[in-house]
Image 1 (cartoon, helix red, strand yellow):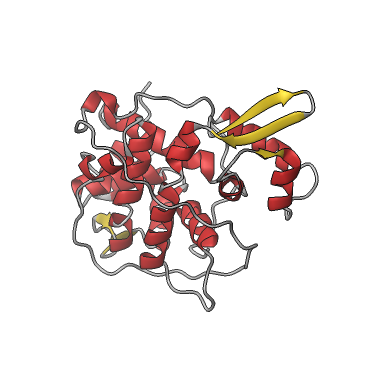
Image 2: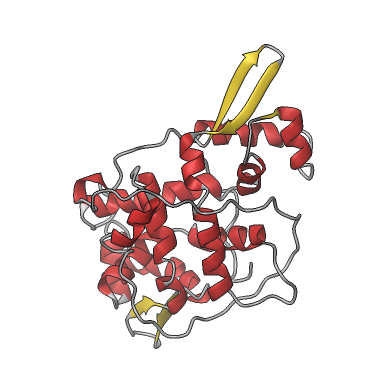
Length: 280
């Protein structure tokens, strides 16, 4: 059953982008993925790289990443087990520098230089707001939409006023703009700037080379937008593992409506970062 009034291919695209974000957003997941960059590691070797995790925290995180198809567990012998990236996990890593690039351009500068990992985690918190992907998609494709019309598209089976809590959150986060009460909503410059990130996640979810993001039917088309509303950072976190270098993908055929999301992954981990205010 469709959960939005968007065309089926669009709904599939939004669902898969949302799922991809849900795989990497839970706390420590990105750090674990980065720690696994390189040769496969034994559990003890990985635990030493993510030493801030308390006893018992790493194993369920690893299991969730294995269930999501991003990490694989290889049992060489009963006493020799290693963990490493799957091909799908390796293919996802170049998205992370893109998130850093967006954060450095659109997030307000903090009082101190922020490690790249914090830029990623702060950005993911904003992108996983409830209904965020659907709202951003509609505003990207239609440019300006009233709250009532947006509700009919994004949540047609709900009371139309239910659109306003997530919409207000996106305005507070600086991703959506409006000229005032009763006026239509549109993407801010920061919201429009997410196109390459969300388009790349869409390409990854569809099993497409990441450079196909530029040909995405919606996210591949930039628009001129007003200045974003900034937000600031707080709370320091442990230093990150170095980010992987984005890889150059081989060209492939252009997007087709039927193949936006033809390659499903195996699980849908729940996002662990709660929604809050516009601060990091």
